[in-house]
Length: 282
Image (cartoon, rainbow, N blue to C red; front, side, top):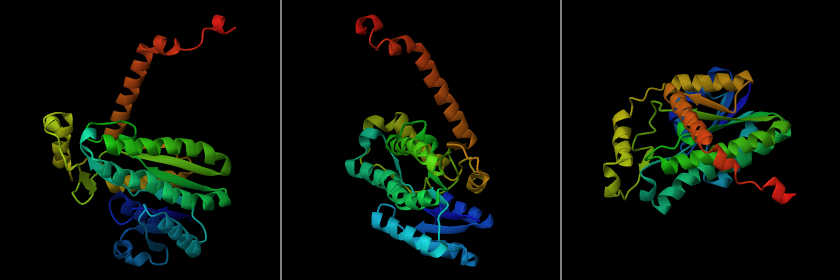
């Protein structure tokens, strides 16, 4: 039995992970801005479940939630940084306030919670940090530039922390979901830029706005299956650094790898020509 600490646990993939972790016999600290929604969804899990208020952008709340978890269960074994915020629009269209709001949740919020929980994992010399990235954390796409940039940031942080924490017995895993049938594309979850620019309307960014509306609640990924895979993979003790979820994500990652390899090969001579000449430096 492990203790799971999950952010954004009141709906979507976060709630599904709570359910699967409880079903696997784990104790769960389920955090959300509205923790009462968690308690209402899992009324029979009172002994194994602690619902805690947490706005991840509030560093003091992150520390308080961590303290509450340790006071109740005595340890934390798995941190799942799931809370997130979306923004749809061309990069130029996004205002400073809109960009900062996404970064406050997706990057600085994740860092708040990670800084709060990691000392307990280090002290135990065991644990697992699971960061919810996205296919957009590996492949940038039109209309999702700002959102993707936050996930790219999480990828870099996670790669570094995986190396830093490995000697201390703590693992790090990135989850990269494709399109899953959650409420992520609903108006209640996804923010759209307020000041759209006409020049983008008929181009790729404008088309993505239409696509997002058309595919909403018709996404190919099953969040229940995704949650089960996440819990089973972390429980296995053999979790990879990156776990892609969904056939669409796998295809996008393969295309990106192929594109990068093609450009690397095409420009290899130019790239390696920039070093000091050995004769000149001797």
